Image (cartoon, rainbow, N blue to C red; front, side, top):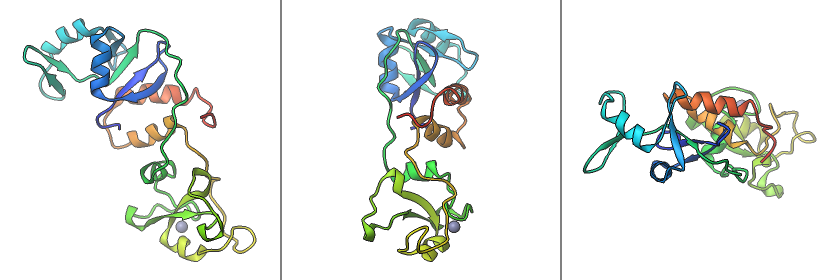
Amino acid sequence: MVANGVLVLNRNWMAIHVCSLQRALGLLVQDLAQVVTEEYETYNFDSWRELSVHMEEEGNRFVHSPSFRLAVPEVILLNRFHKAPPKTVKFNRRNIYLRDQMTCQYCGVKPPREKLTIDHVLPRSKGGKSEWENVVLACQDCNARKGNRLLGSQTSMKLVRQPSKPHWLSIIRHSLKGHNRPTWNKFVDMAYWNVDLKED
Ligand SMILES: [Zn+2]
């Protein structure tokens, strides 16, 4: 998502979405969006194409057409205000790891990835569902210690944090770690500090 996507800013410069490069280029060509640089400059398709001619090969990625090359945009700004439906986060293994930040939610340690397991807080054998509110990362030790017991009544183990559905911006923030996307960082942070993370 972070590696190949393009961050989409609404007309008010608030991050609202991550789209594919293909989609971003389509919006640029149709003059529905502009490219945003790290210095907050904006370029429409023609001026971006012009600028791309002079960009160094090194440190930049390009898409090529028969007649020109275009630097791959990292962030685009929509020309019109888009009333975006709330973006939801897919319930999958990757996003559970990102939400819980590779940390055991019982003892707080960060073991190597292969030592982390996904634990059902209310065990599946007792009707616990696979959903955001009922799964957490647990280290192998804690998972074994907890087994099929219930928190509270059957074990004194406690959760570091009550699991809930994450906001997409917090997932993006966590997945930005290890990627060199300074322009994304700015806008994702800005949007992150401005939203109610419980919304969704
Ligand atoms: Zn643990």
